[in-house]
Image 1: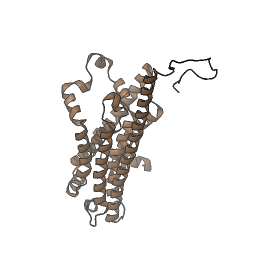
Image 2: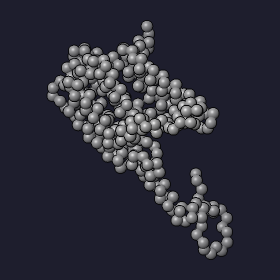
Image 3: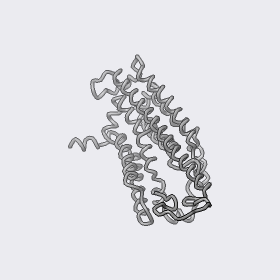
Image 4: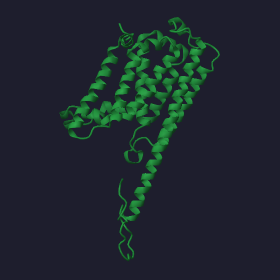
Amino acid sequence: MSSLQWFLTPYEFSPAVLLASLLAAGWYGFGLVRCARSGPVPGAWRRLAYLTAILLIYAVLQTRFDYWAQHMFFLHRLQQFVLHYLAPILVTAAAPGRVLAAALPQHFTRHRPPLGDVPPLRLVRHVLLDPVIAVAFFAGLVVLWVIPPVHSYAMLSAPLYAVMNWSMLISGLIFWGLILDPRSPRRNGVLGYGSRIAALFAVIASQGAVSAAIGLSVGNLYPIYAVCGRLWPLNPMTDQKLGGMVGFLAALTCIAAVLTIFHRMLGDESARKATRADADTGGPGHQAPGPVSSPQPGIPGGAQDP
């Protein structure tokens, strides 16, 4: 067996992860084909972002990396960073909603209400997409799964280990979908920029506190890795400190998201002022009435969109 085959062989095969990965990729691919028939398709970088997210999720859960993550604490934290931060951010950046909707059967979309308007799903949507619940769910799981007794039990119990990984991924998709929604709050009624920034600062505070508690601890919080057997002869405290540093990487990711939202907010404000100025002057290209002595060649009649 080659090194690549060895790495790609699942340590603990999960039909759910395999089926979910194939369904997510196949559904998206089918949607792309339909979009290409009826109109433009997303740009190459959006397609790349979505498929990279699927590959990352599969890689940390269904390759030899999963085995490594069960035997080194800092690798486990990297796995959780991918599930909770990196992969959901890539999915959100890809904005796959239109493509995934295009893959739905046509008779379903024509003769039935949107899935989100079906009463049971509408209730689920209102609960899970409530900003307060989404932030509490996201930040709370950061704390829950690193509590030493809970963490040790999750590493020894295959069902709880799966719950931990799936909960991190689902909460990440919900949270980053709300925070990095590309739509403007002013025109679409989505979560406001101020609320997004406040949510991110709440996560930064919780993530920073957890990371500091782990990285600065003077005792070994996770002896379970000695029981499972570490991959390398790395000092337990060094392993633990590296895990804490991964947590600070997550906090830095939130800071980058804050800066991104500030940039969007400034862009929206500039667009709003431009729209107001156009309205005050009667629209782009409108000239206020007044005496004009003669036309001046070389001067355009009005502003044009780039």
